[in-house]
Image (tube, rainbow, N blue to C red; front, side, top):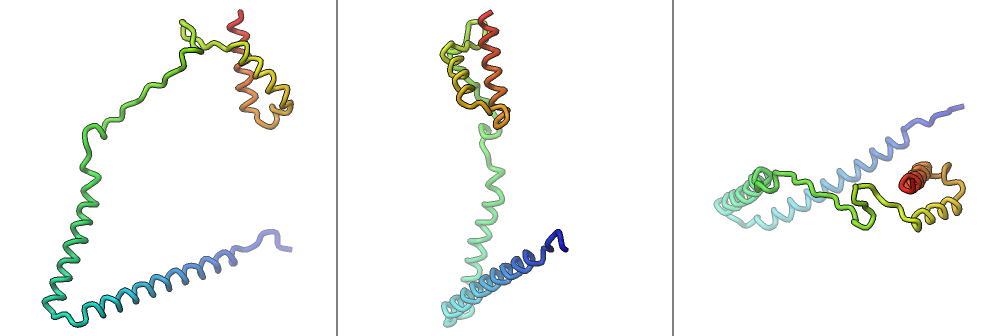
Length: 141
């Protein structure tokens, strides 16, 4: 009895897919070559050389631009400027502590009653709700 299946099926599928992709690329290249041959069949040798130089000049120039473009950055782009995080003023006390209102505390209690298995299902959320309750109780002291 085999417990583990061998990966030969996946390998065969990958090989078939690679062969089909390669065949499509070869068909496209052959089609492009035939099209270019029919386009340039009646050209003289000077015209063919001129066309070759123009193609090399255009694509060579585009390659040089693509290589040099990342090095051409502004000074502002180099500096990473952190943005400040703003806390809504309605929930912050004068001494920097947060204020949990009675309404928010009631919402936490209602949510805990609505979902009694919250500690097992989402322990991170349960911990956060307990933290809100502790903050509420600590500010009442």
